[in-house]
Every structure is written in structure tokens, then in C-alpha cells.
Image (cartoon, rainbow, N blue to C red; front, side, top):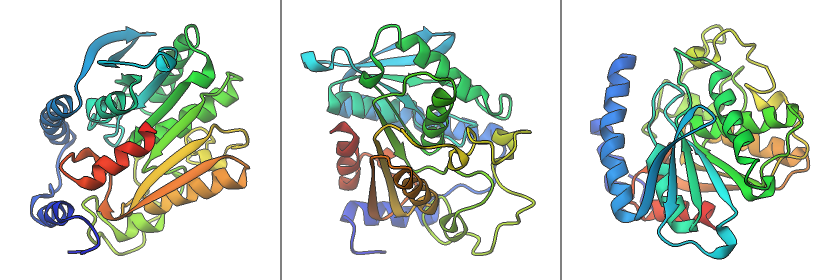
Length: 297
């Protein structure tokens, strides 16, 4: 185990060598993620007290998360949270939204967008765009932020490109936490690491059998909304990108960061040492507290 991370992180990382799930059906994956999401959501609400109300916004189910106290300066601001889960399950709605609402003292709307394979691209993008349009009736665009992890981070970039295509005013800031921006090829880290942060397949991905087919559906993998790397990224909002050195999306996150910089945008990349994909879901880690503090600022 690496000694450059906290003792808590070392213990957790070692446990992943024993507890990582094997192959599973979609139904099994959804049941597993629902089970631990419910447990971890309860833990999030214990550690980060907030109020949660289920609301339908623009025909889309959401959880509206409100801090117990809010400074006057944040009363006209809101964040949209897009959960992770590989586009086919919900692995982080309240787990992501609750801590940020509590720490940043700001309202967070966590979106239950439609999932693949029942609803492939662009269904999830359309859901978030509909919510954003609705929020524009109440909030100034500069006072709206969008953030997400993994699938939600990918969706954050996709939605922003789509808003730009539609000629809508863009949000004030983006939080892109472990993402990719190109479904047409696989970044190096995805060939080096498995989801648990340990060596994965260690062989090139077959270009004729790329991952994420259920989400991509029949869309061209270089579509500029599906794969924002092929979009005109000029004028994107200030963006915070977060990843870690054992994240299977480390390479893809770095590629997106560089693309944002080349387009003249304000983009910040934070890389954590020796931790796997979306480690900030695990509240027992000191590194999680540091990671959560980044977007909260």
C-alpha cells in the first residue's frame, strides 16, 4: 500500500482488493448501488445536516437540498448536482449533494435524470437542460453552477455544450469530478486501472468494442455534445476538475482540462495521490474532507 496517503485511506484501499464486485447483471448492479447509496446517503445526512425535499422540476424528479443556515449572499444562488453511476444506476445523488449543500451553505438540486439502457443519450442531457431552463426563470445564469462525479461529471460538460448550442446563457461555474470528454477512444488510465484503483486489463482496448454502448446508443461517438472534446469549447464557464492518480478516468480528466485551457478558459485541475475513482464518496477518509472543501469554496 502507498504510504503517501492517510492511514485511513491505506486501510480502505487495501480492503478494495478483497471486496470489489465481480461481473454482474444490470439488475444486480442497480440493487447493489441502491443498497449502499441508501446507507451512505443516511451517513451523509448524519455528518452534514441539511433539509431534503423531493420536487418535480420541469417533469424531472429531483431532491432539493437546503442547508440549515444560509448567508444572504447565497439565497439567490443554486447548484445543480448530477450523480454518478455509469449512466445506468444512481450511485451518488444525495452522497454528492448533501455535503456540498452543508459545506457551501447553498441550495443544491440533485437530479434523477433518465438512465440507460432504457433511455440512451441524449435523454439525460435533455432532462438537465429542461431543469436549467426552469431555473433561469428564477436565477441569473451566473448564479447557477453545475457539478457531478463520473457519469455526472461527463454529463456536466455535455449539458454545458448543449446549452451553448441552444444559445442559452451558460452557468457561472462547473465542477467536473472524474470525467471523460471523448467516447470515441479510451484514455490511458482506463487501460491501466480497474474501478478499485488496482491494475486492470493491461492491454489495449479493442477499438471495435468500445465501452459505454448502452449510453451512447446510435449516436456518433464524436458528436460534440456526447464527446465535448469535439465541441467548440471557447467561452466555457470557470471549471474545477478533480481526479486522483489511481482513477481510471485520470487520463480523460487531464485531456479535458487541457482542452479547456487551449480554448482559453479558466480551468483548475486538482489531482489526489494514490486514490481510486470517486474516492470522495467515502466519508471516513481525510482526503475526502479535503476534496469536498474544494468545490465548497
